[in-house]
Image 1 (cartoon, rainbow, N blue to C red):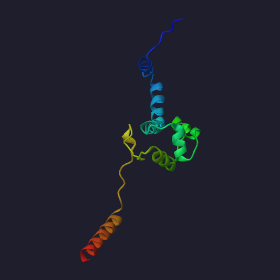
Image 2: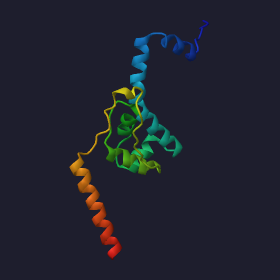
Image 3: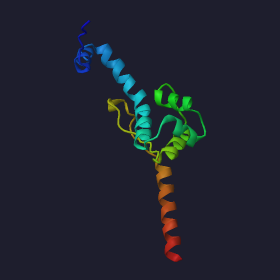
Image 4: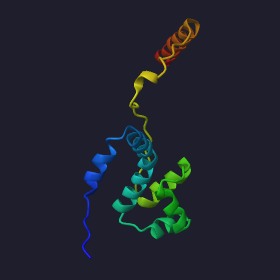
Length: 130
């Protein structure tokens, strides 16, 4: 029995034609970004899930759940994962796709700006007097 295979790239292009599919795919992108980073860190460390679990003091099943993208681990858990894989945890905020929804930069009231300026001048005087 002969079976015809369709390349994934062709299927992906077909999915991208439907706006609902595009929205669903884009929503999953962020959800799985963390899972991808965890898997990449473990692969870079050349470790199995079992080895990472042992280094973290947990089970292989817990590591599998982390890497599945279905859970939202705490920063403490992520830090332990980083230590187990010999990596550093770094969190960053990047502009979203639609930055028009970002709130305007908040300004401090004039009274607070003056108070902060006075505090800075006072600190400068103290350091120059020492």
